[in-house]
Image 1: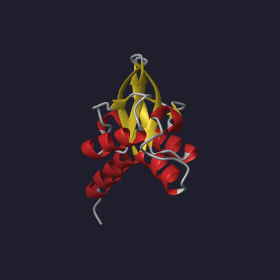
Image 2: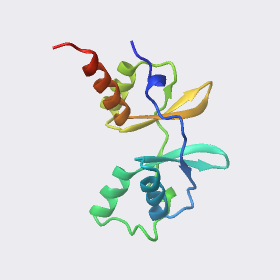
Image 3: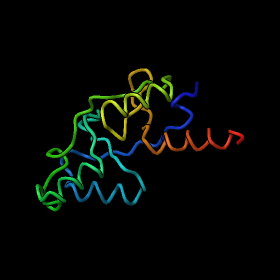
Length: 131
């Protein structure tokens, strides 16, 4: 079974909890990513995603120019171990209705696994299949 380490992103993008939400979103768009880890005093404490932010803005629940990342971030409740399989990651994504999960190795975040990585995996699998 394939491991998440074969498909995950290894570049870690983060933001401060004191940054304004629009700054975090700008960083996501500039880097073509869907989530940023929130870093407090050198430790990753949360995550902010484009989906979370868009939902709040579209509902009219926040002003992106004045709301801080700390007010809309989600605490890191889920992480994956670098040795977990695609199947295990897929089950966690599905059961928790999330799109991005930080990946740890020896207790330290070393990357991010997302639904886009699942898509890459399934596309590769499809290419290997003879019809």
